[in-house]
Image (tube, rainbow, N blue to C red):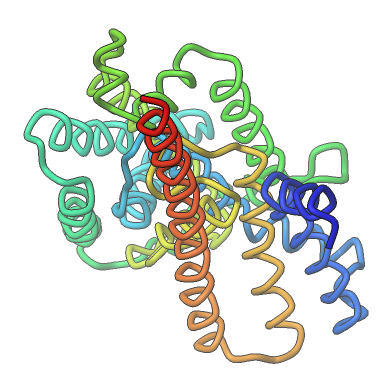
Length: 335
């Protein structure tokens, strides 16, 4: 194969591989099931991924900064249940979102404090907070669901312009906010610097701890939004809802090109990753595959995505080391 052509193909795969996979998945899915490309099914897939996609944008910010949050699913349940009661007592949709976001932001900020101030590993701190949040929601509700949530379910059934469901519009708005913040703001640049090389970022004057805490706060806002969307989608308040949603958020982010080691990631990649997860689940549903098998498939996807990310980074490091060694030997020969 021509070296220039091979290099061009590798470059295209590195930059656009996720989009190529997305297109191929759509083509294959449309062949497997003629129902897949119908407008009804596409809207259904978009609506189904809206909650996890909103969480994925928050997870993307955290992973880019070198952090992770394993408590998202439980906090969705906690903030959503509190938001339901706020709506039932006031009748205000806005207050429901505000209260839900307030609860989740407080939780996220506590995560950030434990990690940046107490120096606890993010994995351990957020896993513990996940357990505490799930226990808290059961304590708050007495373990009982709330089946009568008034008109809060309208949030899930409303269509904007008669075309797009409101949850999809909210998902897209969160995606645009994430895109702008990452690409055009000082906050975004600091996130990439903090995740790419925390020591170098500190040396350049960036307060890495504060940047990461701010990432948790923004992520917490997204989790609060997801809490209301989830309860509206279910048309009830379930304390055991959103189990394992953090895994879907991680999968969407990493499949979309967010490096698990930090410093790399985009909002557009994340939304494509979320759609890939959603399409896989959808096509498995259309072909009658059991939900248990779907969980196995998702787990395998996460392993494959993280492995590909780590192997790709290892190859880059190896290439850099080889180049440095060659330059050192050349200098030695010259001397």
